Length: 349
Image (tube, rainbow, N blue to C red):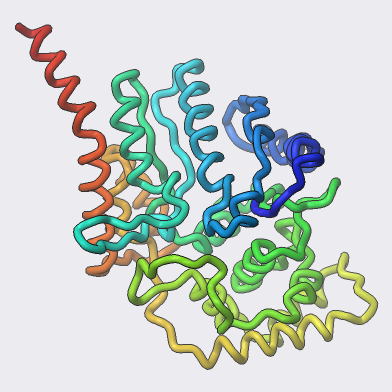
């Protein structure tokens, strides 16, 4: 929920988002198709402030980036404890594990509230209550999560609900940057974005002014010398020819845009020409160095799944990031571990 909202309609819009029929349909269908229970938690926590004030006042971090995750973490732990579940697993992709060292300090990704360091610190705290905190997506970059959905979990792809701006009765607005990037990744797999609820023609038309060489969406220190989130978009464009995309769009029986398919394809062709002129580092597979951030008993089963779809990748830069993340999480959690050791020693004595 990234956009500024006025305080007068903020609460109404948030309630609308979480009570939308399409979101409810996604929850219901997921529970029908998976051997999983659904626990729904209601909270008015996010209506306590105007979400857009920080961006309006010049801060590059949104309120939601600092406030949402504590709510999610707390809710997840409460539900796990109430239901007798031992592990709390939250999505946190490889991109968010990127970090750098400056002057002896570790600089984390702007979305640090879900990164392995924060989750590792929470894990140290929750262990005292018989719970664990972690993630299964640390080794995967964001487009790979979408790819895995299309390849392995395709029975869930049609209920994907990723766009917070989706109008009532739809899965996506098909006009924001997030919809555009999901559409490109889906097209790169030879699948129409319509399969995940996105209108591909509308997504391309909404990006008519986009260029690949524009300024980064978020300002901040560079965390990786060789890789950038915009590489995901460039690779998706490089992967699928304009002719193939034309075939995918033409085969879409729902697409009716009054002859604007040609205009959408022209936008795709222009962006692809820009992308083909860019030389990128080798595309990463699943990052084995970030697999080390996953709980030890879950690593091998997860590795077996990921290896079916992606090659393994290990690089010095990723190894350094993993080492820094593990060291920082251990440093934060050490007082908790020391206190437990002390209490255990007293009981033993």
